[in-house]
Length: 111
Image (cartoon, rainbow, N blue to C red; front, top):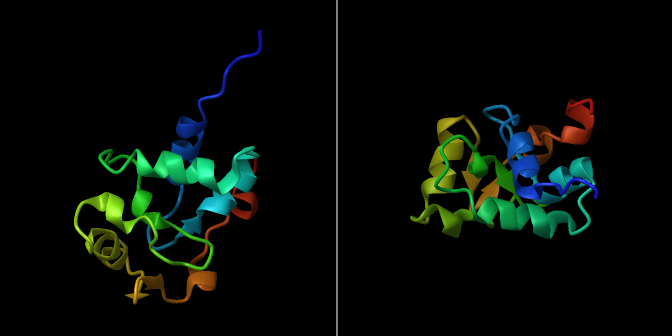
C-alpha cells in the first residue's frame, strides 16, 4: 500500500522556509508541492495553523498580495503588524511591492 502524504505538514515545511521580509502565495506553494487540490489545499492548511508559532502563516497571501487570511489571526490587524515588523509594507490589506517581495519556492528551492 502506498504511503499516505501529510499534505498539511508538507505545506508547513515550505512555509517555514519563507525568509523574513518576503511573502509567497497559496498557488506558488501548491505548484511546488504538486498538490491536486491546489491553492485551496494550501489555504486549508494555513487556516489551521495560526496557533502554531513555528509556522509564519502571515507570510502567505493570495495571488495578488491581499491579506485574505487575516481573519484567522484573531484580531484584524495582526497579520499586517507581523508583516510590517519584518519590513513588509502593507496598504489597504495588500502587500506593497508584492512582485518584488514574492518568494516562489519553485524558483528558490531545489527539490
